[in-house]
Amino acid sequence: MNPLVAFRVSYRALRKNKVRSILTTLGIIIGVAAVITMIALTQGAKQLIEEQLISLGGNSLIINPGKRAGSGVTQSSESNTLTAEDAEAIRKLSSVAHVSPILDTTEHVIWNNRNWFTAIVGVSPEFTFINDWFPERGNFFTDEEVTNTERVGVLGRTVAFNLFGYQNPVGETVRIGNNSFRVIGVMSTIGQTPSGKDQDDIVLIPYTTLQKRIMGVTDVENISISVRDQNDIPFAESQITQLLRERHQIRPGIENDFFVKSQVDIIERIFTISKIMTILLGSIASISLIVGGIGIMNIMLVSVTERIKEIGIRMAVGAREKDILIQFLIEAVVLSLVGGLIGIVLGIIATKTASFFTEWPTLVSLSSIIIAFSFAAIIGIFFGLYPAKKASKLDPIEALRYE
Image (cartoon, rainbow, N blue to C red; front, side, top):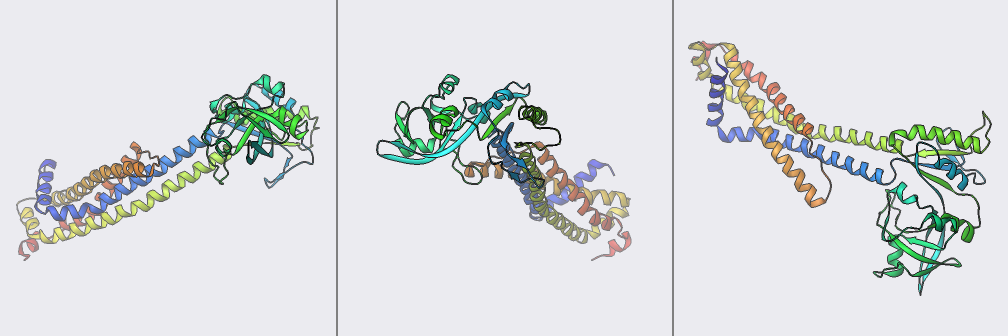
């Protein structure tokens, strides 16, 4: 039989039972829509996490004093071994873009009759580039102000609000410990960490000022670094390790008195989890496709039973087993593909609707649409094959006698 003729006959049979055909495709429609929606949500979540990690220093390294135990647990040394001079030496490495010594303490910040207890963090101006975090009001302090141990500070948004409310604090003077500091800026809002810590509850001042005027120390607690390219992180770690071993005069065979920590492992783990979640949720949604396929098979078997006499007549006038098989297989595949197309449209609509109301990013990829549609076609062929074979194997004489 000509394929076009077979398709025309199949179309007429499906059109004759419109309600049944629509109900048969429901499982496929729901399944395809669910697959597209679930994949879009997980891909959107992955993209959001990637952007947040990069904004929080996805290409950064932290050097801490102490030793890393074999189990991965860190053991701090009794005294800090890192200095601002170490940071200056690291800055000259080819793979390094920005460097900032860091140390911190906690103090009361006082303005007029208002008092706020918060973290005081000493950094260099390059801290903003390492963390991609800049003031939304005023300015950050300069290298000259760091060199001169100036008493200037930049407030985190939480500190600024609790001390000044909606008033602009730039230019005001606050007291930190026994020192007066001039507020020169307010950082943009960065929000909470995954553990719930408020990153805006902070005051940033020159690290030299914190060393000499507040803490009375000469070392730093750690050194924050950003590399020129994320792919350079392993090379940068190697360069930094070699440099610090030489500077700290660590002999061969002796453990480092520092350790370098990056976010690469964390990023890779999160992406692995994201892939697992995508596969898991996609598999769960695919169950609807299988249920829809079973529905197609059942309806096709009913259709074969109802059309036994029609099959007998067609065989009697010369139709071959192959012709009957193709006709019923086309009907099953058409049902499945129509359901798949409707499911794709509904899946995209559901994804955009969910994104609009929840403000959760979604990413409808062409690959997810192709996968869902292809799976729908495979379901139609797989579950339509048995009824089609059953129809093609009918005895024409018995079929003509069927009442």
